[in-house]
Image 1 (cartoon, rainbow, N blue to C red):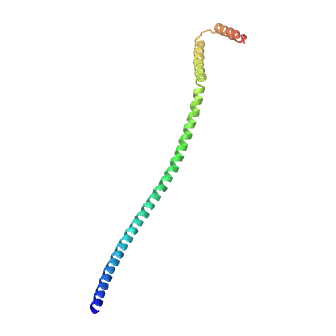
Image 2 (spheres, helix red, strand yellow; image 1 turned 90 degrees about the vertical axis):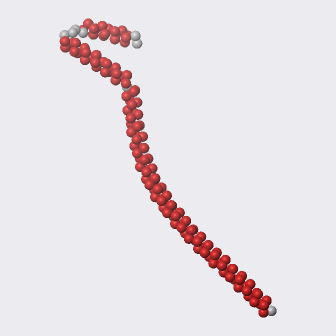
Image 3 (cartoon, rainbow, N blue to C red; image 1 turned 60 degrees about the vertical axis):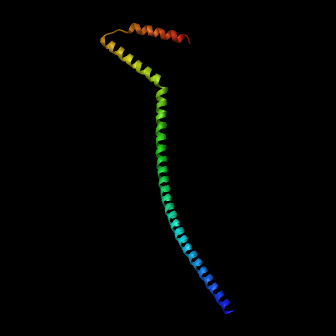
Length: 134
């Protein structure tokens, strides 16, 4: 009976010792896991803060770029309107320049002593014929 009791006590002590070792190992593993999780959490919070600041910078850049783009588009629109006007009235302006050059040539010739009175009457009669057609 005593030997059985000693045997059971030895088994109980051994079992308790093994359980204590398992408990200590589990606690050490848990502490290590908590430390890793804490480090991972800190790393993720730092990454989040970096991303947040990058996002704010990007939003500011986007806002300024959008304003700049709108200004460029307005300028392009103004240039487009000006070019449309120039193209629309190009022939009229070309003819006006040609008429002005012709008039200056005639004025120069008149000042030099040329007589255009006969030409003027012919031109006037052509204009009358043209107007009588309508």
